[in-house]
Image (cartoon, rainbow, N blue to C red; front, top):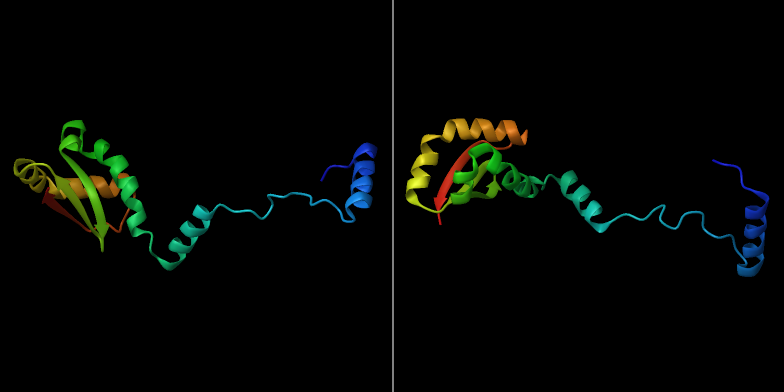
Length: 123
């Protein structure tokens, strides 16, 4: 904590006399963003599984490549099963053939042990 100058001390004394109380030192000291509070609550009760979907969408293109990413996207993660929506049955067949390696790469890239299986849905 730094030492106050004579001018700062005089200002505080004038404010104290004028307002009748000391000015608060830091108005933002105990202020938290609502999003931070909600994220902390969800983490504590173990409901963050769905929150990882955004992160999975972000890494999907890196895992499967640009062409496959244009034809597919992760849509949900529930009870360890990652659902991937694909645009055509042929793409679904292609991804089904790569299921094992895709699952391994997604787990590695996402650093997520919650993902236990992949499901492909045409839509």
